[in-house]
Length: 225
Image 1 (cartoon, rainbow, N blue to C red):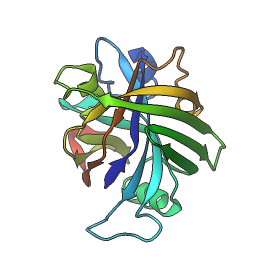
Image 2: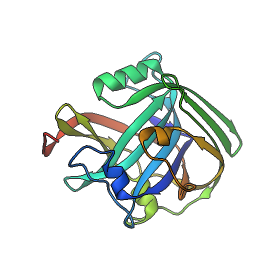
Image 3: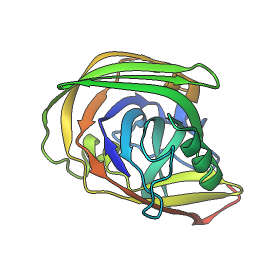
Image 4: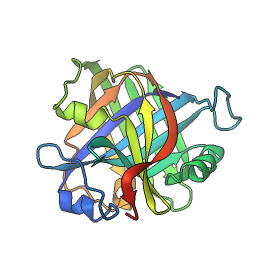
């Protein structure tokens, strides 16, 4: 996969609010005593499965709502929802991975350093509209920093049947840039069960990156969660 025009928008969340949304036994990963929930719009101009482009699913926009968990000491991403502008990709991801994908109409427009992004989930009509301006490059994030915590995640977790499973992901470290939100109207994070009570505490843009994902594997000792 190649991820392009990506924005990380994050809010602090009380850990108890996140625990109510996660399966029993799955704990939120915390930074500075807080959980975090993110809205992450981006586009994928190139997607390959076993090196092959799948017609109708080889290039599309996507937007996910996510939080962060740590299982068996390994930090990762927990997705509440993923909206994609490809019906084929949505069906394939739901069948293959069991990820909570939704088919959506998504439009992205780029003018110089300004990007506008619009999502409308087809099944429910939930929307997200946001615009941002990409700024200067940031220094490489360091382990322990908030930027590292929110972005440098190399696996995803999800419930699959009676097991919590882990899917490994590899990509080079993010090259982050400053970003300024021009506007934000969002219904996707509230649809996941969290209504932010303040503006986002972190907004970061990212330069394009190539990523690889592997099959899901059950986490050791996590049966029956």
